[in-house]
Length: 82
Image (cartoon, rainbow, N blue to C red; front, side, top):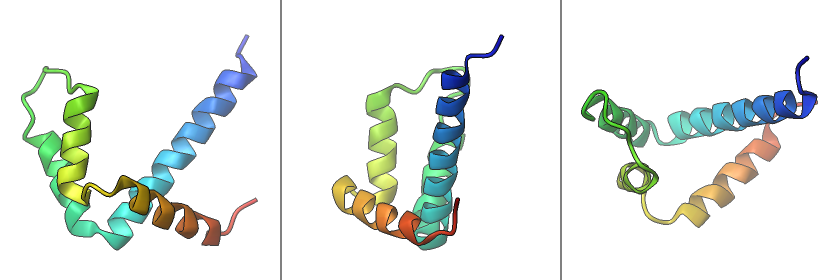
């Protein structure tokens, strides 16, 4: 039997991650390419911890995460949806 709350959380997480990827690729393609290349150049089979992921993200997109989030949320509100 599937837990519907887990299914809902999974769908929400997927939708949010898709929207963020879409936003960053559309409005900061170079940053997205830099971020993806950082993952590609990472040593295989070595876990990337949260601090390292944060460093990779801020190097690609800047340190003002609050401003990025504000712009991202404003953009998402303009998207068509249910």
